[in-house]
Length: 420
Image 1 (cartoon, rainbow, N blue to C red):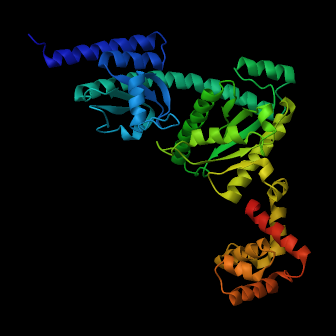
Image 2 (tube, helix red, strand yellow; image 1 turned 90 degrees about the vertical axis):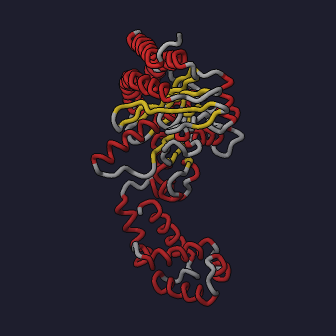
């Protein structure tokens, strides 16, 4: 006689509950949770971050290959969890189905079940949701411990940047206790989410969640590259000390360019899963520990100026800043703005006409005041550009004949890029 379906379902619920409870009480990790869910439900299992970065798995290689072939896993390894919500995503004759792990509106992770030879039924979805509840307890515990560890590591690195962490021997030994390797030349990378957070309390809470997920993405990518690379979340920015290959640095126009751009591309991924755009600044090489404070300041300056000049989503090396680097080193922003106001006069205003004329002025400077070329660049008639040149010279002086005035104007335009 066949057992009653409800009896079978209750038995599976009981088996899953007891198995997961044992995992949690025994201090097991997410891999143990994934393995237990996979055993009871007879499916492949993935535990991912909310944006699809794998945290644990019990997934046979064949199923993993199928997901990749169906574009359900990106080349960078991100699981496209957004496609697995609701009715799930087809996988051959089966499917991949994901459920949220978390409480209320605060989702902590995603739990994904994969089966290639049949659908995932309503009963199994209910079991998956039950497993997600217990998984949330484990994720919360792990994240709480990790948060303390990350804060401790962040405070230490902040002290290094402030020059108050101790002598080089102590810093090296303490870094080693954290699993970091600081020997050899490095570049400091600072990454910030675009744009700046809003002032509202709710916005700050949401921003913090984005920042935590952002920092976790950097940690995961760098862990796959080199687990000894320091990655810390300093509240509003993620800081990474990227080691340099001393043989490769001589062949790169910007030291660290290749590895930095590969890591940035991996973190950015395919922009799926609710990922936020971000900007990056990269320092000059820091040969030793004593050079890290200056390198950190360079990276912060690069990300700030790079975002102002190039817009969000940019990766800017300190050595690419040129004149902007010198302007950004002036601490008195009010003095910078006063210089721009004095040189540009009404063109320094934030009006539509002033912005339009500044654009024409920049084109003229870029073409060495070749009126015909500037007219072609801005799609103006030659006489229209001649009129604009006359208007600019009435406002600013003899730009076409005075090279010193043109230099002042060119610098003033760059000051507006940096100082606003």
